[in-house]
Amino acid sequence: SDDLNVDVTTFKAELLDLWGSLIGTMYTLYQAVSGGVDWGTTAEALVKISPVFGLLFCLYVAVATFCVLNIITGVFVENTKTMLAKDETSLELETIEKKKQWSKEIVMIWQSMSETDAEEIDKTTFLEGMQDKRIQELFRRVGLEVEAENEGLFELLDFDGSGLINLVEFAAGVQMLHGGAKNIDMARLRHA
Image (cartoon, rainbow, N blue to C red; front, side, top):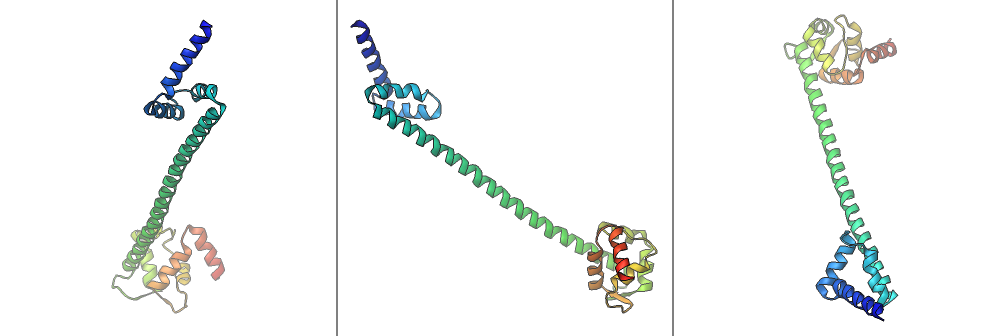
């Protein structure tokens, strides 16, 4: 009988401690979902009153835990999507910037080859320009390996066969041949 009274008294004290007031109940619920107290131990007092209370408490813990997990997952997914969108935008801007720089370098080569700012360059002027190591380096910067003696390159750039190349033909030809000497060699084979 004394053991029963001690158990009942201990049970009432535990119940009042965990669930005896609104603030106490809120604190217990918070601890149960945040790891402050083991929710299984907390649920035992409710199960002793009624299994339904224990079941409701377990349902609360499950819903609260899954809601928090979903919110955290949603935040991570949203942050990842935002960072990906920024990366794509940065990549697009970088590509545009590279194209602008490439265009500037093409114009720089053109202006270096036609010192008089001519609209067209003949084969002789082109070949004289190709002797300049500075112009050869500019070609390398745009991804085209060239040699000083390069009559074949002029023919590849002269799309209309007029014996003259203009800036549009020059830029289109360099873009087409962009890359190592292998691309130039392949174009020569096709052109021959």
